[in-house]
Image 1 (cartoon, rainbow, N blue to C red):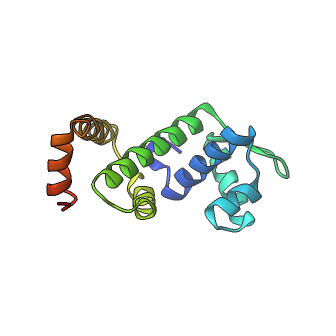
Image 2 (cartoon, rainbow, N blue to C red):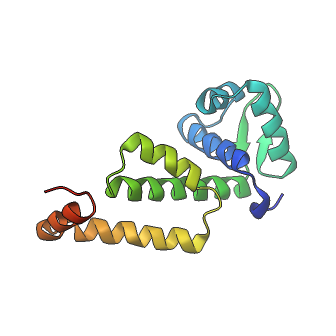
Image 3 (spheres, rainbow, N blue to C red):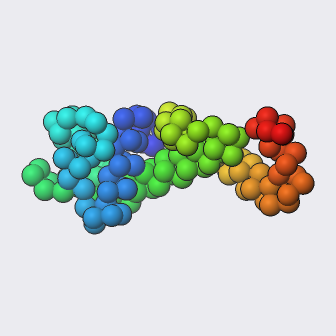
Length: 145
């Protein structure tokens, strides 16, 4: 399975494995099932697919860890999610909606688009440090004042 063929479900699994592993050092199927609101059996099937693709190291009844390639995909997905959520929040979308929408949008985002969106977020944050520009931004984009 190459990166181009990694499905949205697999990216979600990799991302959650990454997040839980960062916290605990490993991830178990029940932790991932709870995080994604899916059954442990579905998670186990996903582990097998990801292991066959060389993206995770999986031991039945044990934990799962990411391979280097799996970690790269998970980190890229996480970064895309973060920049998209931040952009949506900057333009006035409620945090929970922004998080949900970013989760949908993060999949398949090209490196070029990610880079451009990151620059837009940085630009908006930098410009809004100036009170006059922030007020104009809020008036135009957020329809405040």
